[in-house]
Image (tube, rainbow over all chains, first blue to last red; front, side, top):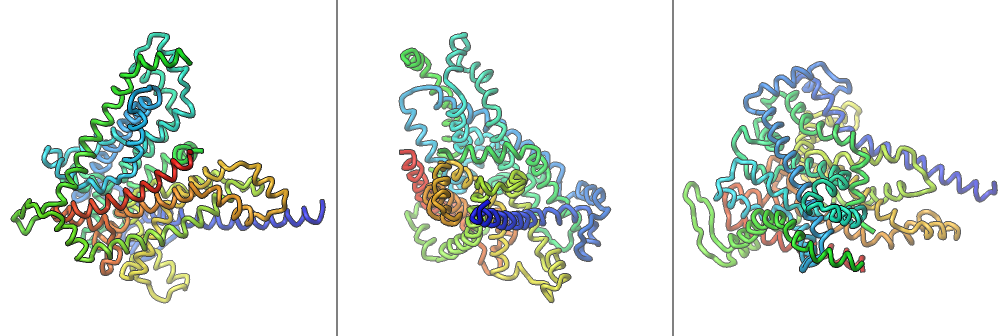
Length: 286
Length: 302
């Protein structure tokens, strides 16, 4: 080994050590708040007020039961409501976005390019700018305090469409479609029985994203839902924030936050590999 | 080739049929509301106590009021400051991490683990995250406990009564929620660069910093610009985090009130004229930014 190679090797080693230290620090920063959340959700109100402790307490079951029995915060309803809305949105958005993407990918028709460009352009229009018209229209149609305005719009999701279109380009050969046609399969059935199964990995990634986006959504639901039993988790959290805080049982507060965050984290940890790959695949191409 | 062409002609109508759900739902739930928002912006239409004023056509009076009141300028400034405070560290850290993760010689172990961890905060509920931070950083919260116990502070720091403290917390949350996503985007861009270029540079004896500055950065520029502008569009939409953290007040002293929080206020007080005008301004603001992204992408493809 020459002198130069040795020097290079040691510089590489230094950079590697520096890299690990930095990454470990970032990991700590990322996980620290969740750690405190987890710990405090297992501690009683009195113990939390006494100060921080790095060890879990014994109040988990008590906090959970207290929160579930709290008449001002219908948490179980909230969980269920959030789940219904998020799951339905995920199903609708992935199915119909696949259909839209397939229309653009597999068929040649007049105005196809213009339609594709149009969808790309509307992709960046934020929902907030049409919120006023949206809410007053929903009021006119008596759809306030229903889930329709929170679920049905998922059918037209330009970002999901764009991702699935990209995926089709890389892994849906036209030959498969033509083979199905030769076998006499009608177009719509071919889409349901042949195309959708091939798209499964991409659909799974998008289903998770749209589930989380809808689960986490606060702005639009807070304008649509005001009936107690219809509210979703983010609205309950906002309500808790505006309540007279000092009267609240902190054990319950931490438990509510934990219940809103951890389900998504657990699912994510199981599927993280395909999710992290999926982000890169869909967002940047070439 | 010929066969494909004839079959396409035959199946054309299915392309249109499959597009119906998208365009039907888009028109009903997005396009009509958007047009109605624009329409509303030209009317005086609000609640005064229990009586409803308007709707009366007032032309561009609402826009004039928004600009003359000067509140919007403050909220725009707040939004941009908090975006920048979160974005600058985010882009630096993300560039560094992306360079490390894609460096073939460095070969960091556990890269998958770290990628999983840094992307995680992106998936959590912003409202729950800010509620958590509100508790952690409250005057009697665990962070103050720890800082006082360790001896860094002699008395609790009132993060949420202090302009820099509150803005800093919001920026920190935005940083944590988005740096993983940015890292992965930049990584995808870096992996698209021809490795032969790096090898040639190494043979020529270039140091890693030189390679980064002279090869990686220029080739990464389109994606870099894409990341900056999409993040800015996201920044303009900043809402959940400051809304929950400050209970919608933008405290202290309106220093953390963002544009969408302002819009939300008008929507809740049913001041439709002003809400409409503000939406139109936001629309054009994001539209200009989006067009920049669009041209950046299409230029790259040519």
